[in-house]
Image (cartoon, rainbow, N blue to C red; front, side):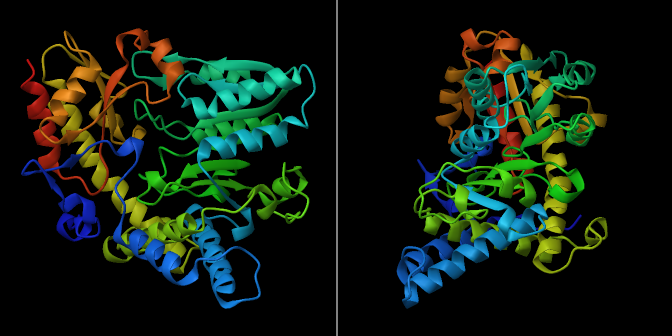
Length: 421
């Protein structure tokens, strides 16, 4: 495939900053990617030319409102939503999920059931368990297959019944990279008329998302995971958002999405999110040829974004294969998650491991000395760490590639870990 890494990396200024005389290797991407240049440009322009609050009669406020509208439209394109009014912005995914769960909780009564999984980030678990406690609802947990860190789909099916009202499930695991069969999950939930909340934070940087095709009721992601600023986003079907009661002040708009966007938003962050989607559209325009046919019915920026993400997904599978192959050859190292080379389409390039005789923190520190940035710990995926009995030992080392990473960077990481022996 034609995927010009030099041109792609030129779009990320921070990739060219050195430390201690050596390049920085950013493999900490699951915790937050580097920022594309259009994001910086959009944020700078907003703060210099459009910085004003919402709803004024004067020029900067009018221009600011136009940027906010464009940001909603851009995210609708990225997620293939029906309307910009189905896009909610907020401080972060966690805060938005707590807000949405509280609104949904008004519809629950004692004995109703909520399904969560042990594979998810705690931001897609605790908002639901706390709401269940408040409402007297029952929480059902879906188990994980330890051998490959995938959801036990037979167990998932057994947890859903006529009392199920909400199913919360991640699109991809932020801890072990597993891509869940989210389409199947949605089908099972809708068969009993349950609502589905999808945590797509970890999947969004790696592949195209089509909420209409998925038919999910709600879906959350974070712009700082797909090359943008620290902003959270929730998509919701308009009819659902319109019926839900938002926790808001009285003067605020009563229509979606604005009734859920409490207070003054992070306007420069929304401008930056617009820039992130524009970068993804550039990616599709430059490297998406041959992928457009996958997205019939789309056109313009929407088609470019989806084609760009499809091209990115294909390249990242090469990174996953190189990373898993390299780490698998290191003695006393265990990769947690899918390692079968024939099943790499079931994971994102987030690979976590443990190494006998080393704590995850110490490994991360030794790699940092070589300007190789990785995460250690539980990354807020507490349930899976407890399930795998790794929490008390410090969790795992997490290596997460993005489409701007190179095969050489992956090789440097592997050799550095090998050198710890």
